[in-house]
Image (cartoon, rainbow, N blue to C red; front, side, top):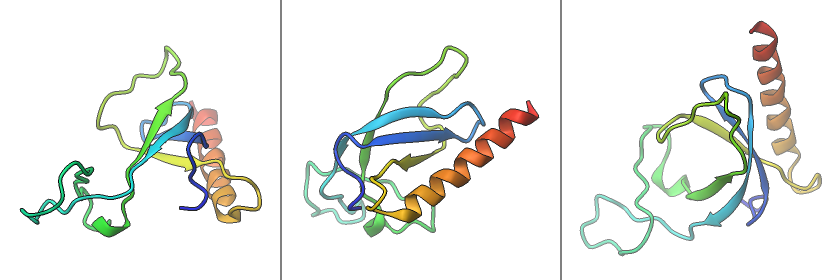
Length: 113
């Protein structure tokens, strides 16, 4: 999480194989609530553990603003995507590696169309 900061640039890869979108981080939640605890704290993000392999304690809600959506790209609430945060080079080399992998996959998908 140290690489994720307010205003950090992100690249958004939609599962629909649409062109990558650009955006930026607008907020980071500082806590989440356990939906199974009826006495849990209020006013915290209620993160629904959609996938069994994601532990609730490992989820930090981050709000992303999409800077622009091309007319050819249709997006709707609930679509699956991968968001890669652009971090300064010395912050985390692994983020750069992950970004490179998705860029290569996106380019390969574009060349097949």
